[in-house]
Length: 160
View 1 (spheres, one colour):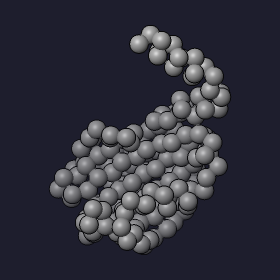
View 2 (view 1 turned 120 degrees about the vertical axis):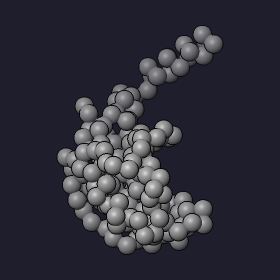
View 3 (view 1 turned 30 degrees about the vertical axis):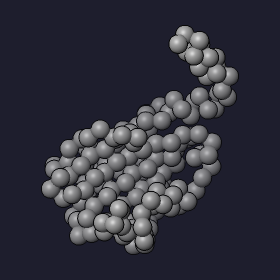
């Protein structure tokens, strides 16, 4: 066990400084609260997550940091977010401020595990990181939940 820990420490010391800095930035940001009806849940592999049981919806945010994300176009990264949805079609795409930067916000209609859903997707690059903001809602609920989703986006603030 000690040998493995020592090897890990030594390996981390050999990583490029840019990689170490990027990894230290992941999850270091604030977002707004989606408001009434939303309950914070364990985010799994994401950074923050909420569910609205009455609406049958979820919001999550995630950050990924490093050179790959620093150089990528937000439009391309937003497209990657829908790769697991079947038959996803884009309904809307706008450029809007997300915290201190311009980002892309889209809505899509598609199916998740065969269930029809609408998605709200926001992506912004800041410093070494890309931040994703996702709303998953039943087809008829997204418009009503859009102000809640925007409250999360409006509260975005990287912590440095």
